[in-house]
Picture 1 (cartoon, one colour):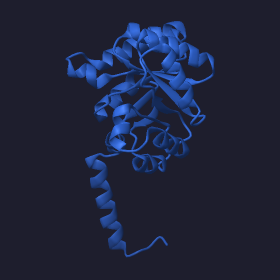
Picture 2 (cartoon, rainbow, N blue to C red):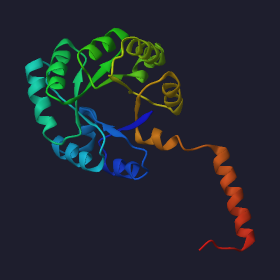
Picture 3 (cartoon, rainbow, N blue to C red):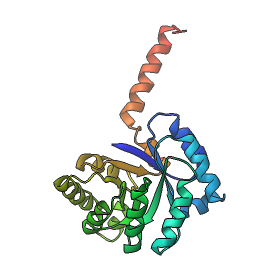
Length: 217
């Protein structure tokens, strides 16, 4: 499974990119607002940091304007994935931009029917929002399972990009049911490495090594 980080904080992105674990980045207008910087400047910097897809979201709501904004965003860098909302206009823009050779991430997916339409429209990525479904007492992971079955049934190449991930359990479950990508907040991605038994074991090894009085260098 690929890991994208969901942030516009370039410091966090540089830190995670240095681990070699980062496959891409997703942003949205809320994250851009939080950065306090001009959108195009932030996106351009992120694209310089990571080689993988960087999702940059349009703000228009009608197809023609989405297409125009998508083309402008795609000019920032070759690894831009234009992020479009899952509406009829968004799907129309998806088809046009995909046919023009641009990567497209269709976002705000909450049903398998929506996911089916996005795949037929040629989306590169589809972003189901797990956490937001959980918030209204619907198991978000059920949506991932349904999407995996549907996409496999028909050989769709659209990648399932699990979004609105809030916990390490979400990541594990996404991997188990076959999500192609998980986009996670920096804290969640960093937290995946942690386990109390790892910490305890390392503490013991270091204590024993110190008793030997040796040095590797």
